[in-house]
Length: 298
Image (cartoon, rainbow, N blue to C red; front, top):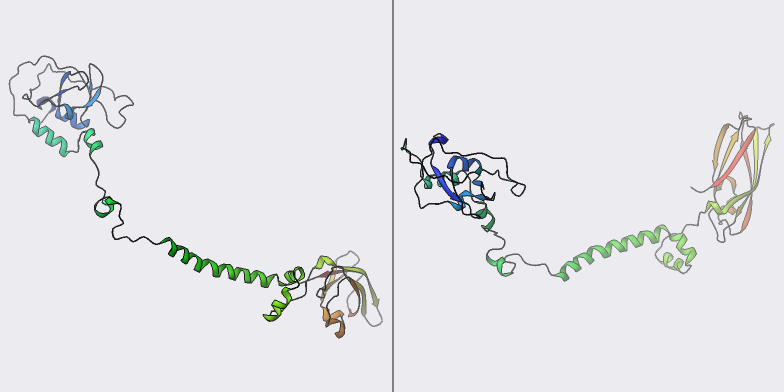
């Protein structure tokens, strides 16, 4: 059915009470929104329909004008600007037109519902219905706070104890130095306490390297000093042989069993003491012009 032969629907502006007539097709396209040509108020034509009169068929002189979109106050719907209703002109009935009820039904079937209805219709919330509406928990039982704290403690306490045990074992040498009474505790637990290894507190007071060319030997002599106020483990020595350009020729790491006698190895490196080192090294085929000597702990 063309727009020209559709029924005109009467609607009234709720602000200025001006009566207008529009077609149902125009209202469907624009979601029922119209703008009053007198007061420029935007309203929903479906909410203000006049149903006490029969629809009037349009005549060639009937003017229905489309206007620009509404002001920013109506962002989601386009407005239809219409002119006030002129005096109705009698016109012959050309063909059967749809009634107001049919237009409303078709519009609502197309999803055109008044905005007022959408805003005021309450939504169903199944969580707020039934036993939950009175503040009860229904079938959901609350977990007692005491049970949650007990579960937390059952997990947290063993973890904290395990962490503390690891720290006591890893730093046992330092702890015994600061708290000597802990030594008896470690002994009862059969935990070995290694001697401290502070390389910054061990120094080489003097060193010398002599070559015995007849036998192809190198004779190393050095004097080590423990500057700590406590006994330490014997350090490692790194001997590097260099050429005339200070380039590396050979390198060797000397452990305590390499430069100490059996009697000395059984004792710690005593606090604030010096210990002489004398070592003979087989250097046949090694053309060395210099050396470097370092002390370190693994």
